[in-house]
Image (cartoon, rainbow, N blue to C red; front, side, top):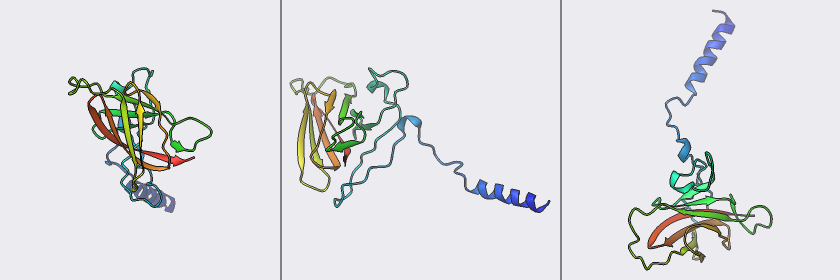
Length: 174
């Protein structure tokens, strides 16, 4: 074998050792970006994972085809935030607003408290601070514009129709 042949063989062997064969693949329907950076100077603890894959079947009503929208699932999987204004931003003067479509998973059983308000109440706390804001979506999960006062990771407690879930959302400076 000539010198070119040995060089080619060595290259193939070297490249074969560098591949990721056998590494687990992330399913396309649950492909997620890395967690966003925490607020500057604040402790980390942000579990915001913006997914780019297909919306689950229970959340894709009104969309057509193979809908792929940025979205974040609640920790219990009871609700999903579909992000139309991704990335969410504080002080945005141009471009899309912080539009979020909240879609609740259909309840397996009737509400434990039929007198509970359907309004989606969002209590958001900025990671590493005592800054807390409350936002409401009248009528329950649905379309909304959710603005917060500062950039960073926001821990959301979500309550509607006797149900609860939590999630983290990151807002960047515009």
